[in-house]
Length: 145
Image 1: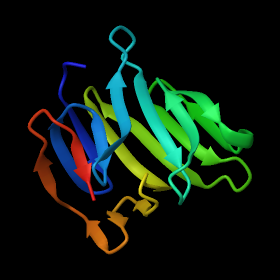
Image 2: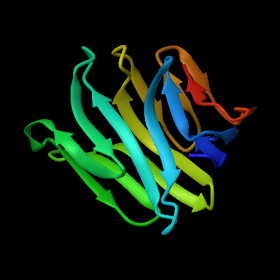
Image 3: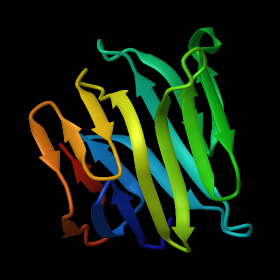
Image 4: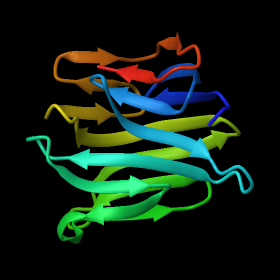
């Protein structure tokens, strides 16, 4: 993935990223656009609080889904992962413009077992939170936590 992407996480903007979102130092989400269709492609690993993988999304397709506990819905411009029973949104990514992806909503555990919460106004993990900031990722990963 050669193109740089701007990634919004809550109200924070990360410019010039490579599409990787590292959470507590671990790459947990990767976003890209399909070279010919422009569709949003998402890679995502969902963990429980013990760091065990529960679901894995590759190129916006559910590859592993323990006990079919999670639903994935997608369009060309969005990917949403929900809990099947409660309908709670665990991850929502939207392509707002070419090379601009918004991670507007989410609630899931990091690989280290902490709960990441993303809302329109902020992201937070444990006692850390950020809102309304702009960072230049300088061609590297978006780093949260």
